[in-house]
Image (cartoon, rainbow, N blue to C red; front, side, top):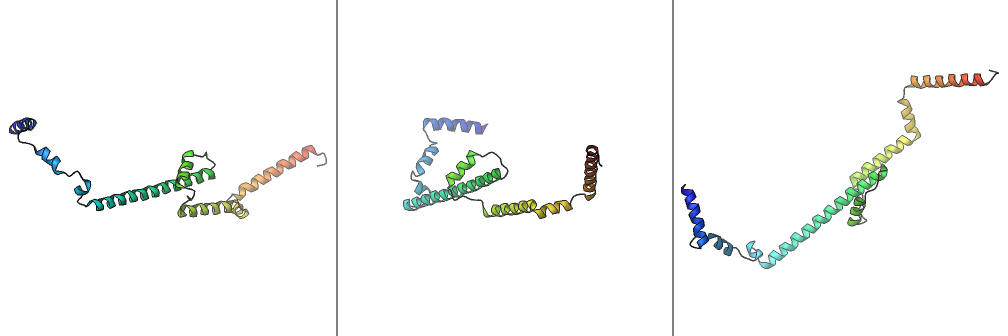
Length: 160
């Protein structure tokens, strides 16, 4: 109860301007100059601000570069799998400049994928696939096809 009375009376006194001017003194004590607030001279503060701006620009440039690399990867995957192109990716690549390419790790992965696909497409790759097939099933299919061809030939040819 005492707390309630004290808070009500102090608020009324502050409104009248008698006593309780603590808020006004706090506002007056903060300097209007941000350099003084940071505890630096004006030149130090300006140099600090320049450094902050430069670091922000470097971070933004690095971020844009990473975004462009990711967009380049998406474009590459869309070409590989014949998916529709995206204008957003192309715009990101153009904004970062034409020197954007796949990161080295991804280039290695792409090269490995291409080597594997070439091996599968080669004759040796096809021979390896034949080794994995069921030879008995292949023999049965060949014999069935041969007997069908023989029967068709016998029906058409009177000499046989």
